[in-house]
Length: 285
Length: 285
Image (tube, rainbow over all chains, first blue to last red; front, side, top):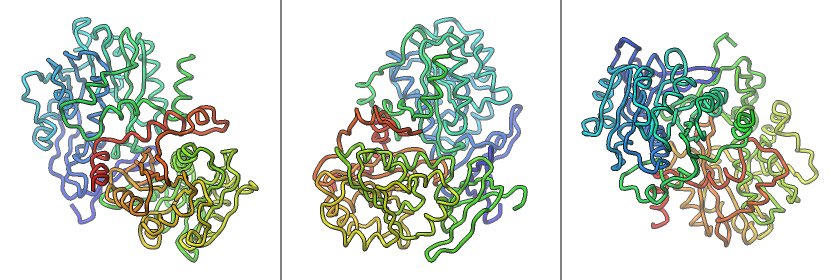
């Protein structure tokens, strides 16, 4: 490590860089290259195949926005499934909800979770919760085998839709998710950057629609260390509209958050003109 | 220019990079080093002293959010002053409001505007509007000399609060702005990154409060090419609260925008938990 070492992620003519002071982990799991760095100002950085998964400093926004909107939209979320999410940050947020009785995390690569337990213990502090179950299997197969109408909320906390992970953004997979959801069940997929990836957001809407989702909505939030610094998640619901949420519960939530609150819940659904225009085109199609 | 040239801006352990295909302008004005680059995917890039001022691709968010919230909060904005704003992107947005009768832009460095006219003509297309006046003088002096209660909206579209520009973030300057505003007048300052610069946002609140502002509110929005990809503006009002806006007018606005709409106007005021907590501390102090 030289005195001026930077981790840099570049794609589509844009780059994000973090100054690193040490590489503290490097392994090739059966599925991917996992690295952990100490950075100068972002705490620790986890990368998979050279792409930023999270930093200590800013992961709270992504993890809170992947979990709390969906959980407060659902009227009574008892059974939750997380697809991916191996770093356990989303799991930790879900477990803050006392009404949740069971969370099943279906992550392909056990090594991601073991690395997170070692280097990001603050994200894994609830892994021992008796309501949590960690499964390390293929989510496509798991979802195909799962009982119909058995889950309230499904959180698709996946990597980018490239390679193997692209199957997790397909209408076939969403159809299985909807089958596994109970009536009124909510699913949410991380859906990339509004600035860079409107074609991905569009294709997610189309795939969810083709899969039979009753209502589909994209929310957005800042995410400094993901490409463009701006990120989105796309929600869909089985048999009901996404309008409304348990606002009183969100305002009185008995657990701490750093980004999410009831006002943000409402605000994150307001889309800029260019997103509305693009997504309105789909609705009419 | 090599085949793989990148413009990189690094500070506080974080970096943003844009792939550039050519440098098309380079000059030292009496005030600063002005450069313009062609980028691979962001159109053109304007830098001042090596710091990103704007790109063709994402400046619309910043310019719309610096202008439309303030203008739709004011009940009848006729006289507007822009401090800084030499690239004329904010000016262009202000002139979209038909009720505005006069916009005075007070920019120190005429060369920034001349360079913008040449390389960012789309931002300068309204510079010939008979309601627009471009002044190239020191804004501190201009504001000190301006008549009391003569302006409805002041937009502080400045560079970062370092060096000479830091005077534009002081209680003394804000006091002059408030003097120049009519009762009910609105001012807005670009106020840096919520993730990186809460101490700057805090100090702006304190300075505006010390200057006698009646109500102070920070709004936030994504801005890909500014540090952290997340940016803010802080509004203050003379003698009235900032609550409410001309919502019907905003919903029926007869001009195009790409980010701002009435829903975003409401949403951009909802702050994350950590910002509320920090700013609540000031209110009580």
